[in-house]
Length: 245
Image 1: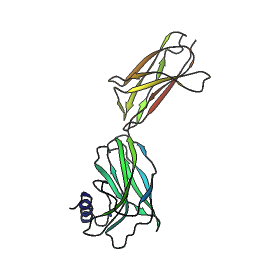
Image 2: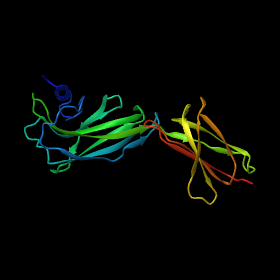
Image 3: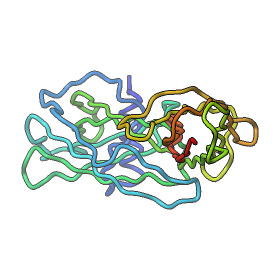
Image 4: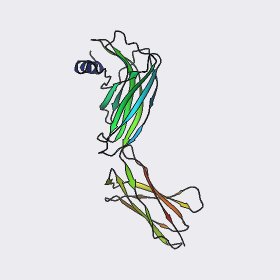
């Protein structure tokens, strides 16, 4: 039976015979090569891009236990499949061998138009003769993330505030230029002269991206609010100093 991977290899060869792409539908096929992928490094694993931003390049470097022989093979080398969180392969290609060594490098792009979230980079070696099933190494997987930029504001008021009175920490959270409702932000306080922030509470943004939480003023210092972000949204922080009299 012809595997999914073999069919994809054959289709790639027919469509772009000079591209040498290794993009495949699934990295699940068992390893059949004695050569292994020993290590994989990625030059950048988090990309913060607005939906209308351009592209950023990154390099994947793989080191195998030995150079993969190319003589007599239609496709031979190391490549990667890049999968979206859905499991769909959205990008991929073959790496260039560094001289005659067991090191291989490939350059790829993440773009603002791409769907934000977690991606899985599956790196493996392959050999395939025309009309034959591919022989594969093990697969080494790495995670990369495309996140939308976040912006958080904070106004701790009134300022100055009388000791023992209430002050309100209030601000707006936007992601990719749009307000984000239903998001949790954590509020911290660092008294004057202290070196660390202390957690004070959590607030949730409303439909307009606004959060608000009241506290009792005890000392002068700096208030801080933190949005932790997610796989698809970048973290954000804002601070505001308040004097207590």
